Length: 353
Image (tube, rainbow, N blue to C red; front, side, top):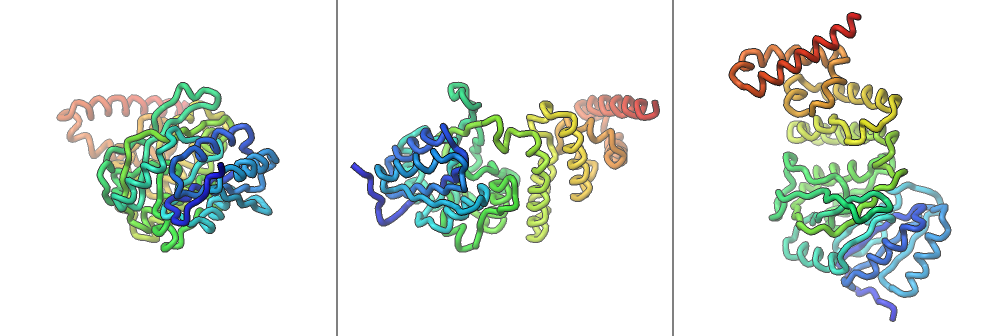
């Protein structure tokens, strides 16, 4: 029996499709098995080179009337595919699913929509697992945020995860503000999320249930070292938007934390490391970071980079002087300064040699 879509659509699920191949079936199965009848499942084929993707989706359409299918005549990227979904959606809420990811609970959307309606939150977030392709038995919980266990305005000091696929958005909050995904941003979800929060000033609720399985593929945007170089392009876009909206003071700590190394940094090639370091330094100059911000916000791994650059060395000389007066009073600060001085002496000797 074919499942029919109801007239009153509660949820629009948008799935950009590009070269999904063997992963798409698991994704679709987890969606069509959802108990929520008042939903539409919108697949947007972004000129996928895999012909099996289209065939598979059309076969499922015969069985489930909740499925809608759109196909681009030319490739527009993930952001463009999401925008096509936004243009054609009718749901009260919107969520996005990666074409190689899947859901864990057949009733999760029914539950999330019910909670969203009762709370009237603009954004309803939920937990997720990350796993390496081919090994979903070993999964890691990601993006937990207990600060929003009760619905409240998004606080920059407790900024939620920057991905969009672990959230239900109230459609009205997106469309009335004319928000779309930026097709020029490599990390389109990060850029969109900051623009959304700053523009909408949303109320968010977090549900402490892990419903989403995020697949880490070897060639994905998030796992490819060369793609990290492009993160600073997105950070600059966001930084400019923050400045234009006079929010720099509120988001200052977030901006500085962008400078911390990604966990994958140690696996980068020397060439990628050099480029990443240079872009880090350039961005620091652009945001005019000061010595105390470096000292208080950034992790230890990035210090070695700083000490090899005159701009950073100059900044650190300020903080060293500022903390001399208290270094004997506070043990932890004292220990840190000894390590700091040794590192500076070592690098200075290296440069002199």
